[in-house]
Amino acid sequence: MDATFSLILLLLFLWSLFSQRLARVELTAPVAFVLLGLLLSKGIGVLDLAPSPVTVRTLAEVTLAWVLFTDAARLSFRALRPELGLYVRLLLLGLPMCIGLGTLLAMGLLPGVSGWAALYVAAALAPTDAALGATMMVDPVVPARIRRLINVESGLNDGIATPFVVLALAGVAAAGSTSDTHTPGGALVELAIGLIYGTVLGLVAGWGLRHALRKGWATEDVAGSGVLALALLSYTSAIAIGGNGFVAAFVAGLAFGSTHGAPQRVLLFVEQTASLFSVLVWLLFGAVLVPAAFDHLTWQAALYAVLSLTVVRMLPVALSLAGSGLDRKTVLFVGWFGPRGLASVIFGLLAVEELAPPAWQTIVPVVACTVLLSVLAHGITSSPLAQRYGKASAVTGAPPAGPAENELPIRGMGAGSISGRRRGGRDGRT
Image 1 (cartoon, rainbow, N blue to C red):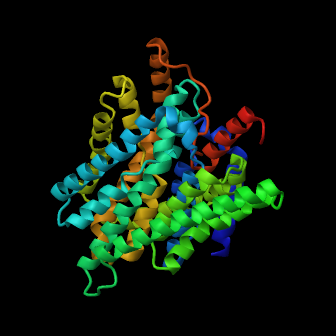
Image 2: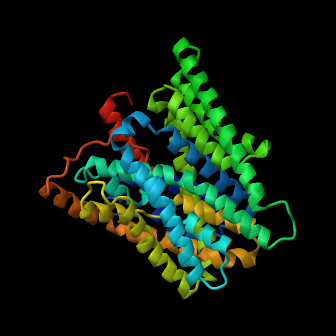
Image 3: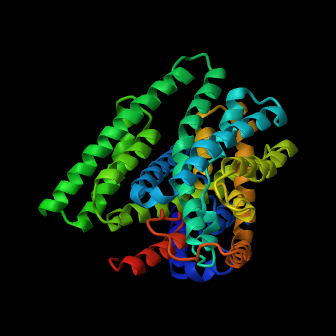
């Protein structure tokens, strides 16, 4: 294990050196580390990467908590106000329709899948991840308005989908157990506690940081480390009082971001840490989840994966954006760039750890297959489709491309560094 860990650290360092150059050939962090994970498990057998279940669960939970908090905290409601209608359409209309359509498809297509299991599959695959289309997200030929729309949706839909995943996992677990400790009713109580607690914690912490910075009691460099601790605290303390840690982290980030009043660079340390942990999750996806899931892959699961990335995603997006003023090319572009990524991977890892083998062996392969297919399909099409759409937008008189202000960070080390440099060059503060 020491040799494996050393190799992983070496590859992380090498990636930091060449990420920009590798991104030019569509080799993003998710693609690279999924392949690495496969090689370390059942590939050429260089080393045996077999982490304990406790390690897998801890890494998955910590990463999801940090990502939920960071994405929410970086949100600028003032900057989003001009396009608020579009965000509401995608998140409050399109996302629920996507979950509903995915649930119905899972119940009709996947053999032996209960209603709760079908809901889990649909909710776990509803969140999108802009990191898988990183080259598109930083390509100036695509209008900034559209890049920002896709990025904001990606940053918030995982937090909105999390309660559905939690409820579904509780339902699946309750169906296969005689215990009353994990039930949908109990999960609802945990969600409510997490919602209230996270809101209060985020507001108090945001007020405290703003006050401390104004009084000169704190410096921005140290404040970044404190926000990192706060992100994890929102998760662990919510669990300690009987709440749902993921929901608490998400709403704490929203409340904190609306009140802290500090420059965006205060969150840079949290963003970079989340990016590092995200890369490790992609590694575990290739090493642990993909081999285990593909041992139980069926043709129904493969078909669902294809439909999930196309009809289940694109139809709700088209319906939710009808009458919004966006042309058909733009609606199709936004609908296609709904890659499944980090959140879906973590939900899959959590299902493997929480559910008995008979329960997860039917539903987790669907998640793994969809994400793997998305990594390949969206990674390959990101740059060419961005160029094609950008040129078509210029011909039809779409708003000119430019920097998307106050956009959320794109997950993934390579994309994150690109996004960060553009922000720094724009505001002159980093």
